Image (cartoon, rainbow, N blue to C red; front, side):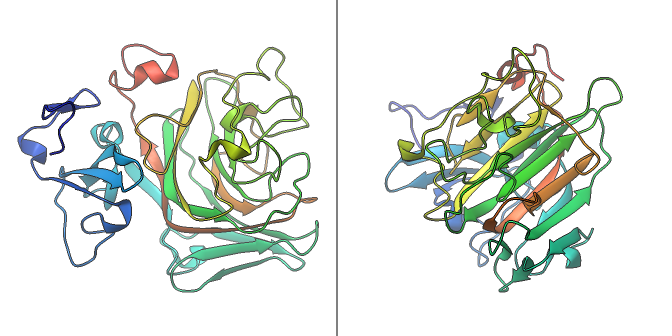
Amino acid sequence: MAKVNGITPSKINGITIGAAGTAVTVGTWANRLGTGDASTSASDGDWFQASSSADGVKASYRYSSTIGEWVRPEVYEGSPVRLARIRGSVLPSAESPAWTHATANAGTITTDGTKVTFEADNSNNDLANVKYTHLKADTAHFFQGLVQSIGNQTGAGNNRGRSIVIDINSHKTTDKHVMVTLNTNANTASFAKGYWSAGGINRYSSLFKHPGYEDFGTQLQKDDGIADATTSEVFMEIYTTMSGCYLYVDNSPTPTAVNERVHLNNSNSTTSASYIVGNWGTGEQGKMTVREAFFGTWSHTANTASIFGAYGGS
């Protein structure tokens, strides 16, 4: 276990490191036990700390045998369920459960056996996206995976050309969805930007505006040196609840972008109760790759409630 100020931590993110997870390793994400380095194995509850030569020790993870991957400790404690995945080795339509492909004009969805490429950058009429309908209402969702934006095509108003969507449908409040745009080819290119403001991970649409909420979120400049998925793959984690959303990039120990507001963008007939990846907007051009990715649900607890502006758990 790595030391902090000369002291070996007994807790990570408020969770005690105990008998259920005594194996602790430190290494690069690419070489994580079991799923990164196939010559090794991991057991449920094991601990892993990501590190890099540039940043040193970064975020901590626990191995979930239910998910079959390393996840944040709060997700591990939150009874996660994997609903859909995009491994990269096969087309999303060949996954179990299968995704629904949608392509138009010159748009294509292909795999080279390692990653899936969504290519719809020949003209604004191209489409290349996949959709999985989860039908999980009033619950917290998450995504993690390796993603990259290829090229710097000019984005249109809705920035749907290189995006990841998590739609949070509800029986209690207004349905809403979160969209992360990998690149808008603008000064705020890291994440989706709205027409009125660059409001972080919840703002994407030039067609819908919630008065009083359009300026909330985290604006990330293109030259910040973070989340630049245009030059290489980035490891991205998105977490949503009915009351907010936040995002980590490249194993950051703290969220890269946070939005604690209830009002995100409303669902529509295309997004309702679904996950969407790729170029799903006419009038857009975009090309992106995805691998080692999955979506699912989890229950946030008091350990993570403060980040959502909520108290006492889910």
